[in-house]
Length: 168
Image (cartoon, rainbow, N blue to C red):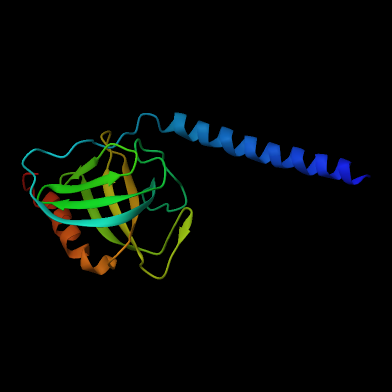
């Protein structure tokens, strides 16, 4: 076999792998097309803190390696996590603002691993929340300037407000 022949075979295999990845992602987008995150922050929400974040992924609940393409949270992005008295807002670059009201939040904790990302122990924040149809998903965030332990108490308070039936 000549070098040109070997190069053509390698190029063909690489093209097939890329095509399979593309078709797999398109299939996932179609599968999850009914899942959307709530958009827009309520008018009278009082902002308590803002933090720069890297949005990592949204996955099926307790399955950190099973990505879910919830719109507009389908792709990784930099942005801002805004804590309010009514929930949390995710303002990601290139996407509309997602608002997770306290009534949707189930839990907030720390994680180390999710799809595409492994960090130091407990270096990610995991938000567990309900999509409109009741599906439970986990959203993973990486804080840029502070540690998760510094905002986790506020996130847990917002989740507890949901459990106690407070208005959000």
